[in-house]
Length: 455
Image 1: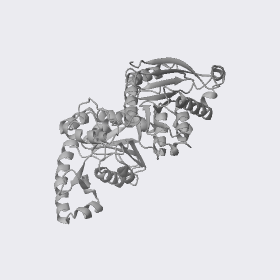
Image 2: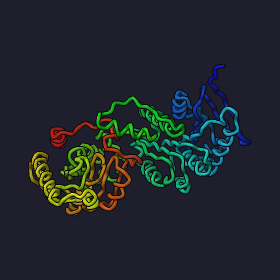
Image 3: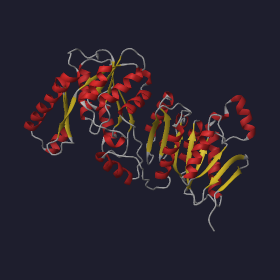
């Protein structure tokens, strides 16, 4: 007999918690929804995400964490919705119930939390090792900060780009998830806290489904997106390692997302955004527009390894400011003569670009200002380090390095060069910057000049 889809209302525990259980035929796993801040299982947003998960073959349980009597009290006092310990205890009871039911006891369990429900879900996950994956939408993980270091389940944090306070909260939480098998912070462009803008909940649901596909089921998911030939190999290699890839639409979109993380610099009047030519200037231009700041261009060039032109042994910036990675030079046994020759070659290209991008010689607006140094990503960090040191020489009040994506090794290196480092994505597997973009088209001199003319 063919298994049929099961849909029913359930009553859980002595507290008489009400829930809606949906189990598709041949369900792959079950997602428990933890609502928060006055929401309920009737939330249209969570119901939409649940429907997408059901269509993907996941069972879902949308359940109220407060009894009808408690909801009536909370509607007046608004205090129970912030009683995270109470909510976490309810989630633990519901999880235990799922493990006892004949139709759900053999399904892998994931949590989908929102607002204060996220903190309750995280607290429960730190206690119960049966939770295999977690997704948060606009969550408050800060209310469960003591539990973050104990969570091992892969955790995805989704925030709207226009929800700046929650971006900062989730960014800090991401750093505390030290034991998590995988962790990501995904920022949905143009979305506010409730993701009410057209198309934004669709993006939330898609990313959520992919995360549970990757980490709840431990399967590989094939995506239909178009990739450039150079970036595809790194992307598919990452997929084979079961790591999900959330990619920026393009460089301008990445700059807008960075602006959300740097909202405290908006309209300050003493901020200069410096973009590393070429691709970094596209990011910087979008970032500066969002912040209402001045923008300028800095020219740095990678010093290529004699054995692989894609590898960097250092970098040089205009005026000859130099960074050389002595460890790489020693490991590759690169001669002093080669380095000197490579520096001369790159300086010629720097001078060509400076004459084109900044034909009228003038001082950079850096001295005693907050300077945000932006690039489109960092694989080795060499050009960013050299650029940061050049800026330091010109006396900024504060130096911030802002990147859409970089590795953990690069992050550790850059922290020594700036007062603040903001990186949106710090993937555990890093092949190339290109693999983290949908559109990573080559940036030409003409595209730079076009943006410069507008400014």
